[in-house]
Amino acid sequence: MILALETSCDETSAALIHEGRVLSNAVSSQIALHEEYGGVVPELAAREHLRNLLPTVRKALADSGADLSQVKAVAATQGPGLPSALMAGLKAAQAVAYTLRIPFLGINHHEAHLYSPWISGSPPAADFAVFEPNISLVVSGGHTMLFYVATEGRHRLLGSTLDDAAGECFDKVGKLLRLPYPAGPMIDRLAAQGNPNAHQFPRPLMGEPNYDFSFSGLKTSVRYHLRDHPELAEDARSLSDLCASVQAAIVDVLTTKTMAAAKRLQVRCITASGGVTCNSALRASLTRACHRHQLRLRLAEKALCTDNAAMIGILAERKLLAREIVMDLDADIRPNWELESSACS
Ligand code: KG4
Ligand code: ZN
Image (cartoon, helix red, strand yellow):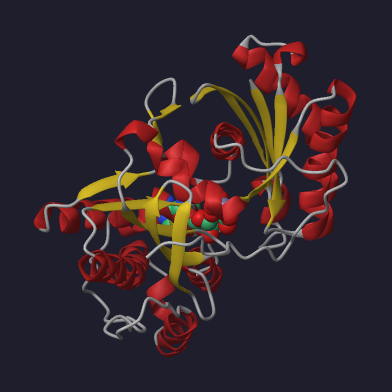
């Protein structure tokens, strides 16, 4: 059994994993704490992780029905993420490994997202028997990346955002509209009542022959549009139309680029994960596009889209099975850890 911890940003999470099954996945979110600052405050996040770690681990143990003596390895997110936040989880995991004299694994947060769409069901379990080559969209508050995943453990970064991430764009537009942080879920809800064609916002880099993204221009054009039409943020109807139109621009770009990659690399499967994958318009758009092109689609389950320790533990278990390196107990955090492309054609 593996105990996994995730503390890279503003969620403290602990999970117990056994033979591909998620026995428990406790998540303590700090959203309420950071909301009044309109974004994550690293120092507060670190303190909150320290406060929440033990209760969250206790909850994960209680939910799984297991006890610490059954834990045979411990994993934690090693990077990328906020340094002080990563430090809290990593050092706690290493302390457990030291005390129990069991192996420790430091996991790349993005790599864990990449394989999270293969975890599904209730209770959730990973099914790598049905794994197939895929194009994987990882789309969150901090990152927007497209990967080609050839086989398990072999992936290549195709492109990423040059400036703001898609989630960041949702959140910054939300700030302009004075919506609570993080604004993605609220924009999603408001957009459901709105007309996505009410305003034409730019679709940056959408037609370019590359897999890079850029969302800061889109946010700026919303800012100018609001400056010229302040009344749009005033009544509910206009606000919904505005949200639907911004959302449509983001979703169009994400879907178009993902499908172009699938066509170019001739894969038959698309996967998506990260907080923005909770977005209902993105889920619907990818579903439609995959249906049209007869591709299989695996969207990470909503509970596993946002940051969670289950995906960290599932990947750690695969790495142990593949006999990948177990780390020194004094391994350090890697706040800027880029997910290296592992050899694949
Ligand atoms: O993966 P995540 O929990 O944290 C990061 O690693 O960043 O993603 C959080 C991001 C935020 O930007 C939030 O606004 C966005 O995901 N998000 C959404 C939705 N739910 C969360 N964006 C659009 N629609 C949603 N339903
Ligand atoms: Zn994440």
